[in-house]
Amino acid sequence: MPFIELQRKKKVSPNPYITRESYLATIIHEFGHIYYNQHKLWWYSNKKENLAYLETAIKLFKGEKVNIDNLKIKIPSPWLWSEIFAFCSEYYAATIFWPNHQKGINRTSLAMIQRTILGEKEKDLDRQNSLFDEKKSLHLVAAILGKIILHKYPTSWPQILIKKQVL
Image (cartoon, rainbow, N blue to C red; front, side):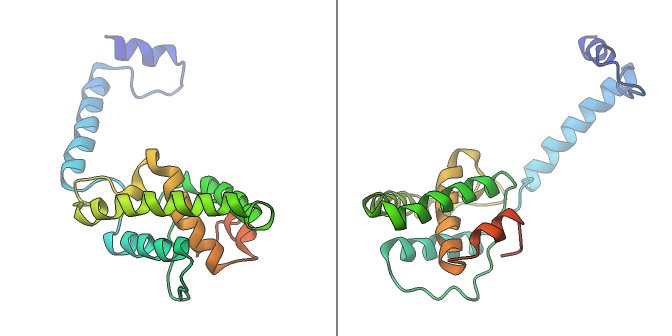
């Protein structure tokens, strides 16, 4: 069987996946993923929190005053930390050196959030990917959470993100 041959070529010792039984067990393992994902998707997502982030980001990108002292920020996916840091770096620099670029980020981010918020409200997060869970929306999610983080932690955001502190 190709599965067993490929496992043997790995030269991992001990390797529990070099027998017919282990091949069959792997099929059951993969079926377990499929079965579980039919009932609950593997990622964490909270519609109430997600919509609060979207609505807060809309106000911030519009330049409205927002009190976010009590807003808890959860970064739902590990790959977002770096993307958020990069967004914050660019946006912070734009506020100092390139105000037209900052305005462009605001306009673009606002338009993208407004286009996606209605769809996010309609999603069944037990069956569908949230905007906050899709790798294809990393830049948008980074802009949403990054804008909130910059507002909440205007001077300490670099240390907070590098240390992956609770927000």
